[in-house]
Amino acid sequence: MAYLNPGAGVAREGKQAAAVADAAAATSVVAAGATPTKAEYDALRADYLALRTKVNALLAALRTAGMLAP
Picture 1 (tube, helix red, strand yellow):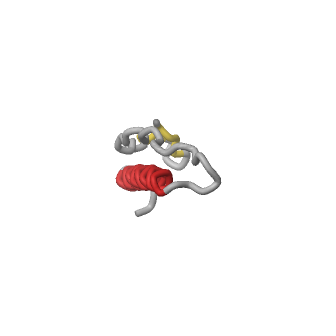
Picture 2 (cartoon, one colour):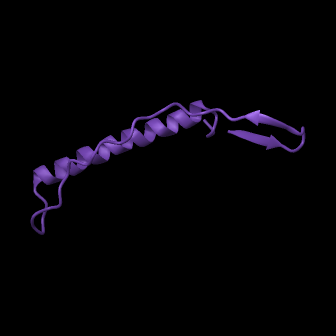
């Protein structure tokens, strides 16, 4: 995607961030009762950690591409 540089009157190319795969489908399920079981909690925690890893990978790709400050 080119951006217009009004000061110089020229177009400059923007850098593209590295590809990051889509987040996996959630593995946790809705708790059956009022209090979640340990298995339900563990599944939700695993989903959270996987999503956290994915977000960090996206941020790293954007920093590497120069789209975010280091």
